[in-house]
Image (cartoon, rainbow, N blue to C red):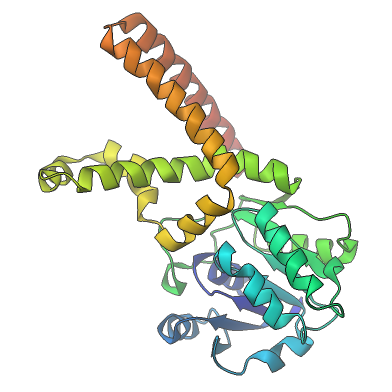
Length: 299
């Protein structure tokens, strides 16, 4: 049982965590803090949170007896939020995040803790739930988002073992499986399998939308276009921050992908059907294998 959970950023990620815990009677009360009153009101109506505060309201007193503080805000906002909460948050509270990048979050945390010497960074547990949809806001949250999904926890050398266990158990109670990774390993991996696909989807839709015949293209787009570009409906603000935060790893992945496209371009230009088919066959087999493993993991 978590006594008090405070969620900064009550959207899909933070809201779904709160709903999952409530569905399992694993939290006594959830406090939501966010930028917009309309979203907080949605969260209250949906029973995601029990009390709500806009960032410019007086929410500091809620931190004094918090058990877990979840930062589900864009990664660029982590440092500012930490600097505001550290002087007053309970010394026993585990503080964790749900950011899609980890090295920058760790750097932001180190900077915030350095500005507040009385705070103990051992209570900070970086993490990343590998779940989501293209929708955002409290209205998009649902209690089963994390069932049979992975949550990557990237504890630091100084991270307190009890704090790490508290955070891991919170996500496990939500139905997730927790894995341990180093922050740099996390960022390199997810640059390839998450951040790059989002950039490609945004790029394709933006390119087509900028053409004079865009309306005709979108009118005739089918399920292939829908499936490939679904994630282009995600929050531009969030993905801007993720791309910039993981810039070096993402640039490396974009370069690798561009080289692969160059090979396909050359094969197509010279009419080399055998080379194109061989490349597509490797991709098709790899995709089917991944799908099989993914389905087995969800059982």
